[in-house]
Image (tube, rainbow, N blue to C red; front, side, top):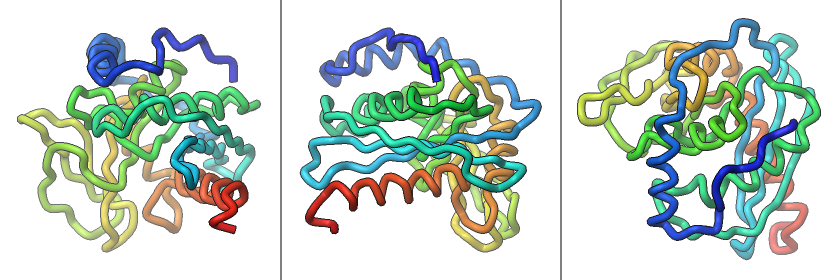
Length: 230
């Protein structure tokens, strides 16, 4: 993928990172859809055994054929500390490096993390989605902020995620009687479109297939490169 140069530095202080988030969040577009969904890219991360590197994996999955068409991995030195709410500053450089290796052009990008459902409404899916200027969404395994009401057990059930009276995302039951996942918009997608895409990408498992496979990809990469895990 041909991506524009990132408009800010990554080696910044937490206070500077918060200012960057606040400056960029107004540029995020929370509307739109993918009219012809075929290729969905999923991104996930792992960290090296010595906690010195971030390992990013991207898997491009053909939604119609239900098969992988491309996958790429990239590693980058960690340049930012672990600070809740600022994880994209640790993780995005490696994700962007992996995305630059992708030869095809996915229709949508799914991130194992938060999007709009974030204290400053600028989680990983918003940050990377804005930088690559493609439709994106976040599919998190747990709540970061806000609360949800009760959710029926049937597949496809949803309930709003609320924070201070604002709907910041949706809890989605992707399998019958299985724990929900938490979907929020990243960039260039409405919340309804993000939920629809998530459900289309969930087959036999709780998680969307592109991010589930990306998780397996980075786990294999970590095992192969860390002697302690071989």
